[in-house]
Length: 247
Length: 296
Ligand SMILES: Nc1ncnc2c1ncn2[C@@H]1O[C@H](COP(=O)(O)OP(=O)(O)O)[C@@H](O)[C@H]1O
Ligand SMILES: [Mg+2]
Image (cartoon, rainbow over all chains, first blue to last red; front, side):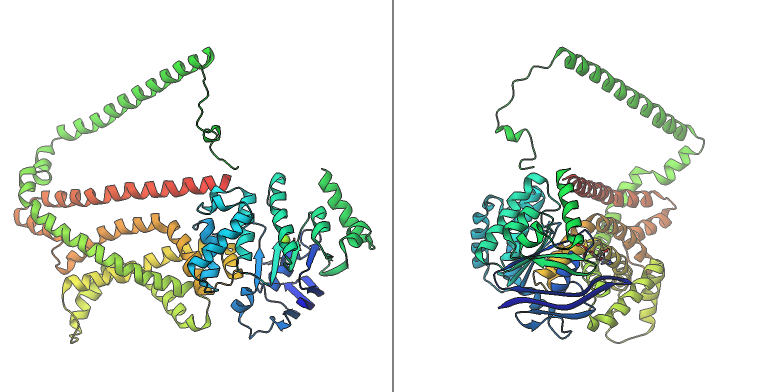
């Protein structure tokens, strides 16, 4: 069963065509990794899926239901999706626990006790229980991003969208965040993630998609795309990532 | 990053540390510089302020000025009348600020809302704010205070104090609405995006994510407006409300002595100065916090 189906997606900002005739299918329990140069449209694609951007053509389906239909209730769609941003975007006026329980209580109408209970279960699973009553500004970047991930999975989303969740972090903090994502993958969470961490992509990706010029230029398993890319553009991109990594 | 304060990361155990000879010399030098600075500040303050005072007191008109403006015995006599008037100003300020808060919040929400159904309210609140921010408060007080009774509407009060308060509320709601709106607009769009992607509706996002953060940011300007509001309640005296200003005026014109005005001014200052000091402290604290966040 496919959780996400994107077909012929087009998205422009003014004169700039960011996504053009893009197709993507994400089956249940799989992880799709988006790679591509900065500005290639990875964030835009994730934001379109989450209805944070209005698309210009094509179709997006979640569990077979067309969410690009103008009549659809956006809030209902977003309830089924989780999104984690590069810049964490925790709510600074709420404690870690309040951040996590806000949507379950207000959106999913879970009782307060139950929401706190399951939030604490998640926090302790990822070694953050002692931070439950702290405000985000008292946490390291890595801890903040882990809380942001927990916040989005507390809603039990059908599909998790992760946008370069480690790009704003100190290199030493990257791994604690990636390890959560690996755990979620092992749990069978369906996800689409944009990342520059190629080693990590190899570990979690069922499919790797290389974005360029508005569509997916090359796709395949991590082994195929990352180890033996077919197209010169992909080779060139990977070479540059590799060089940047060695700097 | 884990533990911000290096002192605490040492789990309470203090380093035994004896300052080096070099550091001791530095401490002595620093203390000397500090003493010198204090001496200079004290001397120059005495000199300047003293000279001003001496100039004032020895000036030829001083005796007359003292009798007309600073007749403390007379001031004490009429003090309770002016204080009673000030109670009116304070009460008016408290009542008005509550109503203003509610109306201003409504105006700000209407203006920032994006929903189609809210369009007429968005237009109306924009017009309202534009109009009442641009008209002098005194004019609004005169219009409402004298204009409404002239209509002879049945069931509408002719009480000057009520009409005066309404006029103040009308104008200040426009000011405060703009302050709140600027607070709402200052919240980064990524906060909304995060809230919306968790499934929160527009209204829930506003209520739980945007407004609480916006309010924190606008507390200092709102406190400024509160000080201004207290002072501007003095304007309703023009309608004949016996507030502190009017009480002072009645006494002053009875005896041709201006001490009651000075007394009224001092009484206002007794409230406004602590309030402004407090506002500065709140502002400083929020700036410090933002700086700390910026460096994190
Ligand atoms: N809100 C926006 N308005 C205008 N242009 C945008 C906007 N968001 C993204 N873009 C443009 O779309 C292109 C793709 O951006 P983005 O999706 O952020 O790429 P990536 O995430 O792969 O780095 C960029 O050229 C960017 O300038
Ligand atoms: Mg991006």
